[in-house]
Image (cartoon, rainbow, N blue to C red; front, side, top):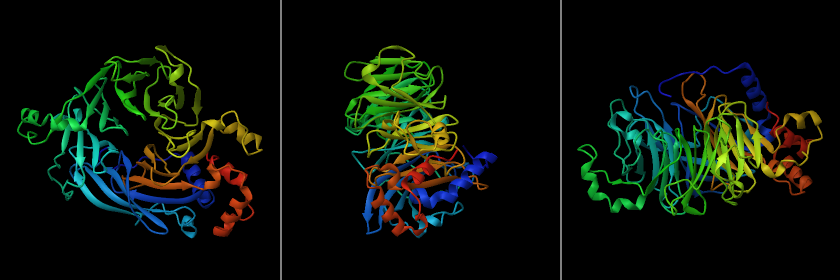
Length: 469
């Protein structure tokens, strides 16, 4: 990821992208494009800060993956301005893929020790962030770093600058911890997985107990409080790629890895797996896992085999190759990220190496499409109802906005000719995800706000929303 580079885009991808740009005003309520000077691996929503009649101001966290020589790696705290629904009328027609949006303003830079592989925010404290580092020379890649973003001084990202000092270090991995990181919504528990094939659990509040232990960490880090694990969980036979807490318990969690295994754990019963599903995606690496917030029986997994599996934990047992409830196939490359929608229990998003964010509704599986076009129905994977193809290289992360319904931020490293990345914020038209029978009223309102949509039908717009192949 380091350095400036330009990845070639295939002719088919460019053609798909050009067609998508033409139809933006017909399928999006709002879309913002922001070019990043450096590549980035992670972007996350923070708390809402302010609100006007037309906009919301919200904190945004993202990373800058630099070459270390020109500038140090940084963790960026920014302010983003989100346009409210049905407000972006003429603006939606002014999409500019070369712009740095004025809606995103850098507020503070924290100089990170090495690249930031992943960011996770702490629900119990809006000021705390957790990150993984790639800095093996100081064994920082074995740690989870905790940052108090309000207490951290703003730094100038100049060549040779010393990295910022984290407020807390979570110790427990014996090899690199790269991308598997999560924080419980119930208690300040942090979960991590790594190349050591372990899943490690901490309680951030334990730093009060372990302050005295910090003196044993050496002269460079003796002043940084450190926390030791509540538990270390062994059951994987290859790198742990992702971890996830049960939404209703900080003691229950799951993990997936390059051993194609899905494991469910319960810290209350000990360090051994509760359920171990081997070959959950045959023999392919599993990159991501997500637990449903509305119904904790449902778990999603995304894999290098380009598919997403939905499992019902009530039907899981120890063993190999158990059948998922359903397999969703709508990506042309590895699936990197999955996330359930916070607004509707049956809806989730997926992103992958193909540069696409797909939005699915598993309740639509087996149900006839609103479209009568037989050919299109044959080409459309069951359950898929929206495809965001505004990126032309892999989408490394996306996240539903917890404070603004149906708004998503997505991130890719595809900024043409500049070697940076592309961050987009977007919200599909509500007539695409709402099917409540008020079709005429919705179209009349849409026609009033956007005259260019006159003569169209909801069926046509919904067909457009998933037709970019």
